[in-house]
Length: 428
Image 1 (cartoon, rainbow, N blue to C red):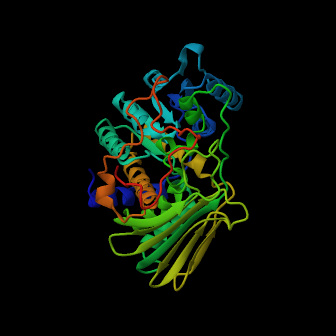
Image 2: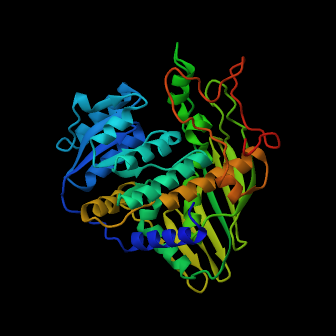
Image 3: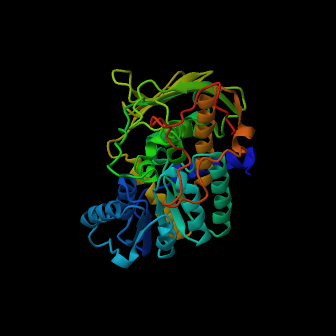
């Protein structure tokens, strides 16, 4: 398990590397790419990866749905006709399909539902492949520990690993956080962050569709697959605060629930709002809010920092990054500053130039920060970091097959088990 000191060193080095990297296209050396998880985000990430260099060729794809794979393949062929060559023999379907696709590649792009990420990442590292894996990295603490073990193995094998926390690669964030870490607002005393917005809709069950098939297709609404939206989405805000603080919180308590997600046919298990108070080792506190799908409510996606000499507002919606106080400064996010695209350049450059690049540890700790927040809101308890990261509560099964029962099942009325603060146990 990494120490706090090693985490601080890793996040500091990552920030410096990101801040000083020139985002020019690397040399066009050949890289064979495999895509694992062919949904919208996987297709988008593959497009962005292929955009970096003409030397990258998509040669293999894996998914549990042939229709989804074929749709993704046709989209990518139109976008990059000279870089996509995935023969029928290299299109793999099923829960073990990822192993076959990984075997054909130099670089593996993992964009499956995040419950699968620890297993897909570990297999890619076991086979000695470079990796780009979407956030978050896990849905539970055992998954985070599996990811951290893969991170250590990747270092030993000199593998390059990028993670889809794209804001780390946007110059406006890099410059603002560099100034904050240099003391632009003095000692940081409190922080707030928000992801208050809309949500993807739940999916109706298809006629004759089995329970596992339904949950996998409607994966966002099941905690064993998505981690809840505090993990899936709010991780972006939480990672920014961890980056600013050069570390993770030491405890958390909060509240949450479901007010509009009450359709048993659509809404699975997850909450529609979370509020978490996180405390860092120096006593400073982060007040974190995320909310989805509540029509007519205030919308905001931003991070804010208050210090002894001023404050900083990082507002991705207005595209304005501002520091007020004696060190007043501001910068607007440029229209072309697309983190989803920029995050692929340093990974490809590291592969082609054989330079160190491994973003897993920071992303794993940010994933665990979000999981700890969910533990707090689901249970209503005060959660300490050490007990959270060492928790044995495992939501995601070791193996998934079509003949298994899902980890959660509806009752006779079609209602899925939903956390109840005060009753739900955080580590059971």
